[in-house]
Length: 275
Image 1 (cartoon, one colour):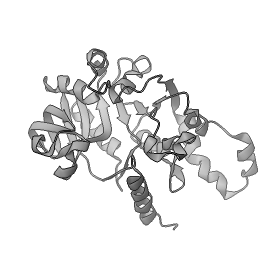
Image 2 (image 1 turned 90 degrees about the vertical axis):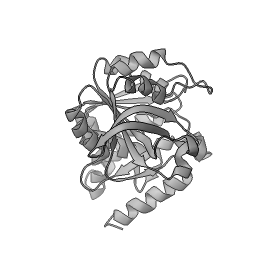
Image 3 (image 1 turned 135 degrees about the horizontal axis):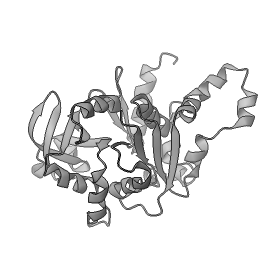
């Protein structure tokens, strides 16, 4: 099992202003749980135990969310409400939570690079909380863990089919072969125009990466916006046949926009038998 999972959560969430002026976007609730809880639960259920959260100094509320609150816990200790905190205590008892302060937000690749010292020479997962994924049987990351077992030494990106008119919002793969929803990637294009997209398979916020990605990221030049893109680093590995894509089973909701955030609440509430 891959035990390390990195969560890039240092961004300011400006699409959700003014609330994100003081409340990190990752703490906005989907029903009664914040986005970051869904992300960490998915990693934990897939077998990860070393959680690496890349935050910034203005988002320490994420760290506090996982810290004990003895006064509150004593108030509700004899109430069924204490069970509502079990999702947090399960993580803190069974996982190590590592917090890294990212002083500059220079792209996803740069955020991933911040985890190098802790992750070391180990393969690791990356989960972007904005992409809330649901599957009744196995989470997306659990599915990817199985794919990795059969393809050790290769990076894996999760992909889904998207409408071609929306393709320029995503990184898109080009592939030369496929079998059982697994694609051998030969190239990747970041946010192509619809007429330039090599496929309609878009990369979403789930990755399994090999440790050699760190060295490549260190050598990757920033794009025109001054950001280091993970897509550009993966392109280099794809040239040597070391990147595969997996078309996962389940539903993804993009919570990076207000519309998607509302959609996620409606979707999960439709599944919640308590409501």
